[in-house]
Image (cartoon, rainbow, N blue to C red; front, side, top):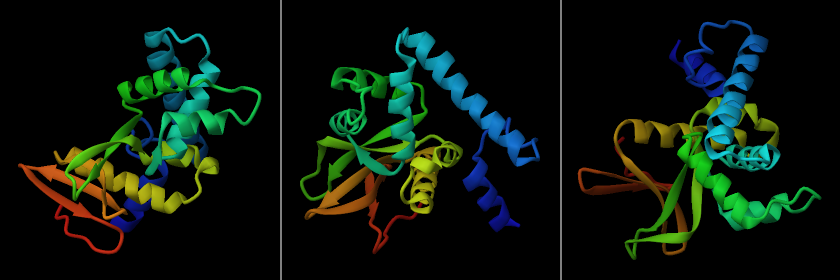
Length: 194
């Protein structure tokens, strides 16, 4: 049924290598393999990163923060609470590498009233809900994070330019632009026809 297929998608995502596998343990191993190969092969080798542990810590934070506002400074502060601190320049470099590898998308905040992009924080969305599930022990509002991540990714897949927004100090989940027209929604009222 469509409901079962969607529930399966929220857990296992859309990676083609995962679909043919039937057992949860096989799927988990495949997701770990995909995640590790992206981190180790794509980012570490391409960027010639020496401290892959720091990259993994930043990446874990980013994926676990899917649908949340993040900044280099709050990642630095959060990761600096233990003895393996990561400096702000390293965090920013790793964020750039993560966005470049398409593991997550950094979405700017847009002031709907002032029609300006705000530079303070970006909202982050994992490329696939399976990665959010994979890091679920780190996620506070798992279901909300999954749904918002799926909506963001679907809007982008359908050709929308997506930003998050603020209007009169209130958050707007999505400001979606297509064909020169802005649509927006918040969690209380919706006027987006995706």
